[in-house]
Length: 199
Image (cartoon, rainbow, N blue to C red):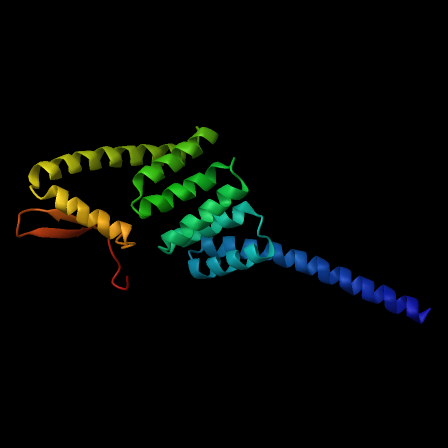
């Protein structure tokens, strides 16, 4: 009789531990979401990462972590998580939205446009995707005009373009900067956005 009671206690303890463990997984996702809402992105990132370790097949966790990386200016990591989200759930529009946002910050505008377009194929009424798609189209149109103006103003345009291409192909990253030719003696480096002092 004592042996049976011990076995029942052990079984009950194991069951309670399993239930608590399952609740703990849900807690990580919830804790991550709450930290994200509080704009505590570093802790949100930690919670989402731990949740992914426990459930690497949950596409929403990758989407959440992609958004968190994005807000921490970790655009390469944001892109990787968005792409993992898409791999796990290719028919979910938010993965493409996250991918497009990361591509935009990495100045890969045609890729961003493509991502938004894929998202819009799935959810054509999504207001955020419609807005982002429209904004990227306007930006690409503006950049075409700038390139045409730059080519007209720049007698060394080909050499300057080759330098930029060489830097990009060599893995040089300058996602917040761009260069502009003014005269033979003067070229400018400009920022595309505010760059924090610690960046």
